[in-house]
Length: 193
Image (cartoon, rainbow, N blue to C red; front, side, top):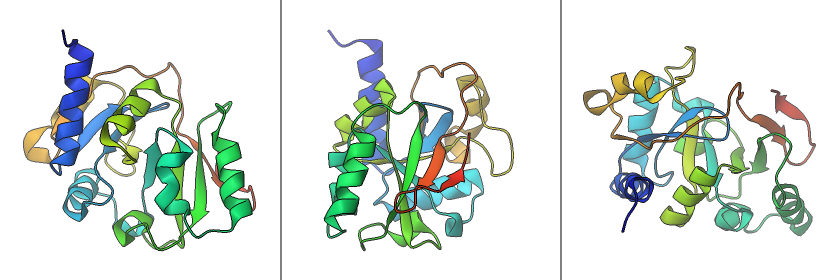
């Protein structure tokens, strides 16, 4: 018998595969997500968030293997470094800026020559990415420059006519902060927590 959680996960997967935008709890904050290869879905997400495409977006996945297309053709040492850094749970969620190999769409990279990749430590995000068979867009659930939504009730205002198609139920860790962003080559912190 299907549980409420498994039904919600299947619904979120179907919405994303159909070109929709969802809200879901990440390791740190509520996020908006969609299929990174679907330009219309990404444009819908950017309009919902009122975020310019030039700023780029983060992708999350269940494992480094799901990011293989974004790592293909890069220096072997760099690919090994990414795999090593993401193979064990980090003390804090970390998004890595990886050199662009030609795979990431312009609407994901924005004005950057890198793509932002994070292997998730959230059980729910891992299940979602495994259900999809690959990465999903992850950006904080808010209008750019405004506070992040902290509950499903706050997300309701974005539903339907405002561009959000589904809210995947779940919980955040108390007092969580956005992921740290680091450059994979230099290790430099771009955004701290």
